[in-house]
Image (cartoon, rainbow, N blue to C red):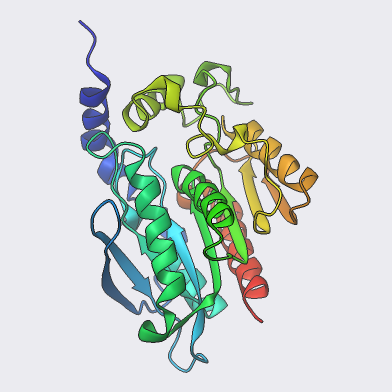
Length: 297
């Protein structure tokens, strides 16, 4: 008898949790001092722990703010995997970074992570004065599953008219959860993401197949992209998710959204964490530089 999706997902959490929090030693930016504090944000789907990364002492305040959503297939809850990215952006772009520890499946499937991601971002936008950041100069971004949540948060903010991110960073995003993962091809024989693990992620996060075409699950399937924030879209040449990321960048541009699209050659999914180091550093610096420009005025 095959294992249920919930049991498979729990197995993935146990097997991959620690592995996904590991970052290549030359991408950890341990030479950059870390100024952090813990924060708890109440949402419509329960309290959400966050880590606040402050820019260097002496940075003009209130600084702009960036909300970061980590990856992990909506199943692995390891926000510390993005410590190096948050640390680098805070230090080099002079930005407050909020790293969000949203709930994951199978314990908390869709729509819980969406509700938490949106509510945290809305709270950050509204509560700047009390926390010494400028919520009117806000950006949102993430990697893989976190990039999916980024696209969804921006869509919800547009539709509800609540806040207006100045930039969204879509890094190696999963954007279509209807298509069979086996149809998502890579240029290499054994890419990091296998169809099997991708099916486990999707089944755990969205147990009802009828929900998978919802734009809040599969942003690439939306046909109304006009009015979304400017986007930095990063894709990896050998990633199974490369094609849908490339297509989303083109669709945003066709809808009149300002898009910067960077395809990194010779790398796979998660390269901003595991390397190769030169490409990983370039991608992270591109995020920081683009954020600094978008949030500077």
